[in-house]
Amino acid sequence: GTPGYLREGFLAVQHAIDRAIMEYHANTSTSVLLSQVTVVIQRFPYPAYVNDLFLLAIQNQLPLLLMLSFTYTSLNIVRAVVHEKEKKLKEYMRMMGLSNWLHWSAWFL
Image (cartoon, rainbow, N blue to C red; front, top):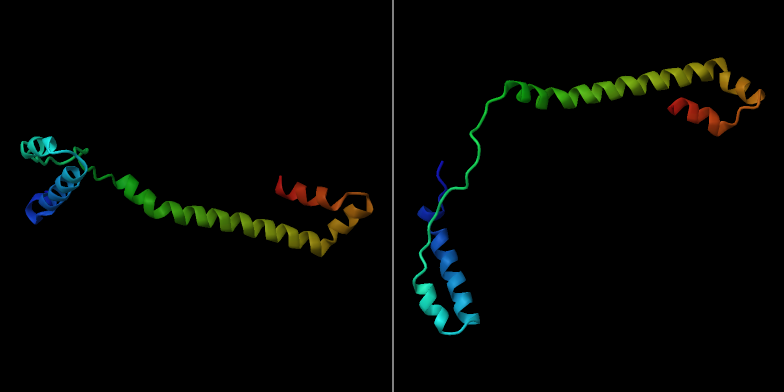
């Protein structure tokens, strides 16, 4: 709808306060200039509203999709680490000389 600045009186109060501040900080010649000032209101231009159903679907479904993909990835990593611990593959790799940091960096690459 239309903005209620003019109807509610907000603009008049703001203009009166601004004039009082300017007259307080300036000399008497500004009061003559300020008496000639008129306030005009115009709504800021903005593009028309577009009802995009794809955007509406994406904003509702994308967070769920991201969370499910993160959960699936995390579960697969946990499953693989547990499988490795059950088979004691890490211990065998340490016996062959693989360092601990290299083993865990391989998991995240």
